[in-house]
Length: 254
Ligand SMILES: [Zn+2]
Image (cartoon, rainbow, N blue to C red; front, side):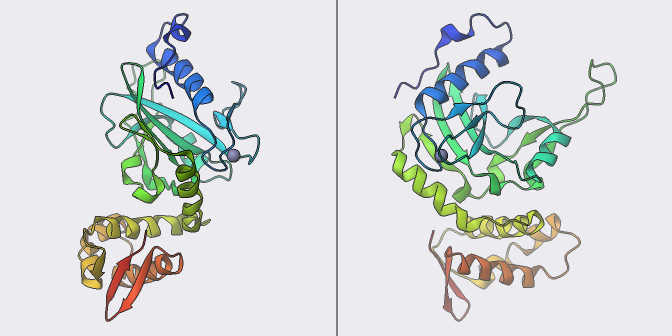
């Protein structure tokens, strides 16, 4: 796979953002198959379809592509805050490709399935100042670094291309984490993030309770954080992500 963008595509565009958009979209179309079903090619939507950038002719999944230069970091610039929130709470939310490039070459590419998005992941930026052309307009960042690692599936990692079958398997494995009710989704991913932060594969209930303060800051209206933790651990067990060993001991599975 050639990881370099075709720079010739950019010559007719003045703005760097437009150049990158054209080059990165063409690169993805030529090189990446559908992470959901493995179909060899994704199709670009006509430019007047604002809902997403690509779709798969075989399985119907829709995808958006966001690219960033420099260090990968944990957040990426998105458009209007209001639109982003509306989109993730709707049924037409696309899965997101996060592409990280340097010197017009792809370094990292990951796919985040649509059901990993919660309003918490969308961070509002400061409204534009009163002197700006679009005064008061409020943009946002997607804090993809807050999404549990199970939802960030690598396709290219440090320029190494991951086997397509592995990508499709990981993508479909995460379907078990799909929670339709977006308000319940946040709690499940918060607890999964806590489990991921524990270094050992076998852990105690007390190890998760250590995150109580942090969770309380995120959910100040909830006075029963410990109950919530145990409830979400049961859900993660039912979904096959952890195993209950008894006597307050748990084992990570995925
Ligand atoms: Zn597909």
